[in-house]
Image (tube, rainbow, N blue to C red):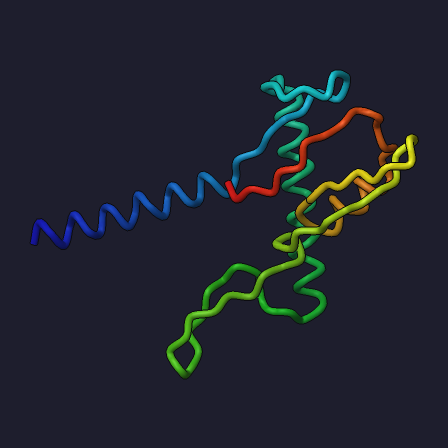
Length: 133
């Protein structure tokens, strides 16, 4: 009985850790380009924008008749599946900078890719890392 409770608890802790990880963000200062902690106002604005975008994405998906994203369902053959929305897609955006070189950046979702393309390329060199967090 104790072993079963321990296994159930470890599964719950593991799932909670994954949920917390999925919501992690990094804030980059718009003026300096350096990573820093956002102010309370900046964090609220970002979270409000992200919530509004998620709500719009869910409404668009529902209007198109597509199944809800991220909701697991069991198929008749015993396989557990979940449909993913476009925000699960990673886009590689390549732009030509002022010096004629190419700048490469990986972003999640079509909205982020479009925003990246509409943002002017800086002349600062960037180190590219595409890591799973």
